[in-house]
Length: 228
Image (tube, rainbow, N blue to C red; front, side, top):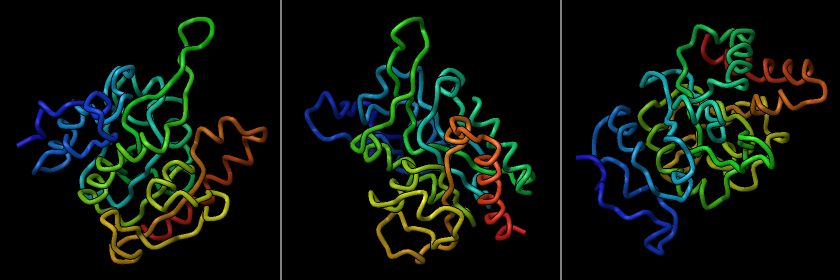
């Protein structure tokens, strides 16, 4: 049975933000995706066009986690279909991971934005810790069901969601780490490895985009060695 559709949005009930009541009691990724479409676990659902859930095969060897969907992802309902996603696919190809049918998702499943002062453009706004924490149950279930050999975290938000608030990309990028257990066990208790790198959107914003892109490819190449 899917999550109780009558569950009140956390922001309306006076309780803390939490997506847990919306998780299905059983089923695989398809059931999880259907349930996430109706998630009101934090206020972000109100302004977003739709939930943008993860995409890819169950039991994929490679899983990539970013921060949140962007404007194009919000409209199309799929992760990493905008400019950052296009750059990521090119980096995966150059790193030798183009043939991997990866599972891609985000920590937060709704687009958070502020309207531009002029025009209709929507400007990305970073999710808060409360919003990340509220949405984390979806990511935990995705990680449990996909059970990848390598989990690539793209940027600081994804890293903090899985490794704690002290995580810094610059300190850990490009290094294989034990897979964190999202259910609270010690690192290494879950099979697989984690690798952190920058988010592709950071490459797009970089002053030296060519060097930033080369760094992303170099990090992803480390993940490729595990999947050879």
